[in-house]
Image: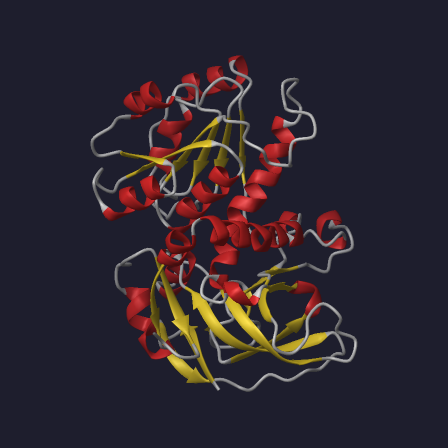
Amino acid sequence: MRAVAVFPADRAVRVIDHPEPGLERDTEVLLEMLDVGICGTDREIARFEYGSPPLGSPHLVIGHESLGRVVEAGRAVTRVKPGDLVVTMVRRPCHHAECRACSKGRQDFCFTGDFTERGIKRRHGFMAERVVDDQRFMHPIPGHLRDVGVLVEPLTIAEKALIQVWDVRERLPWTVAGAPAGSGNGEKAVVLGAGPVGLLGALALLVRGFETWVYSLEPQAGPKARWVESVGARYLSSTSTSLAEMVARTGNVDLLYEATGAAGMAFQALEVLGVNGVFVFTGVPGRRGPIEIDADVIMRNLVLKNQLVFGTVNAGADAFQAAVDDLARLHARWPQQLCALVTSRHPPEACADLLLNPPSGIKSVVSFGEVA
């Protein structure tokens, strides 16, 4: 079958004839892959800055943002059935008995670092015609979300972050009793970055009642700004609006959601986080030189303004289920805008160009079915 793989020794990206997978355990499921999204991590892997093949393999099949359809299910499978649309989790637990996280099924908090990740770290990914995995890593999605189901995995980044944000906000005495987990209660949220993770994060914040702003490099009158305004958020371009001017517009920033991977911008923005504010890092910066920060200001604000900063990576089963549920809510509220995030679909043979050339649009997808 066809698959897209990187070969670190040859520094090559190509479509290969990969062995067909088959069911080996009663709890396994065979999927035909429909869509696989391309993100910054895939591009880093294709530039050989990141990623590692399975032990003993000269190549790594890439792809971790997936949507598949169930073809066959083992005898003990109860979560899904043939014909179901499925999104599959990325990270697999380590096997160290002392790892409390992995032993509890929360490999997204793995202590040892010996986890594997499909399409990223020592485990082949989803950019292949067919894939087998265990049912416990699969989440069915409604059939009417076929065109946007590939967005579930990038949406899990915001979902995991907001689960943790709610744990923090819930400690405050004015939090509304009985409010749904993650409710924004009209507080101010600023998203840094207008890529797929940032725009999906903006939707997740809006649907929870946050007054949401997006702050990014794109022009104030550009297509992304228009998209942001069309969903009821507000857009500010960093090329024409300073961070100080941004705060003058927004007022006290309760939540800063970083989705750029740009350390300089992130730490500058940290200086304008508001009283009792929470800052979430989701981006991983490239290997660039050191940056200058005003550590005194940041430390003083963290202490005197009761601020919290945390990072979040990958996602657990709770965040995947939340993403499936939220995707249905987002689709019902903003169907055109959500579909517009998937800007192009391509056959696997086009993958090398997609990975090695500068990205265009918002979310490019490799499709193994019909390509519109």
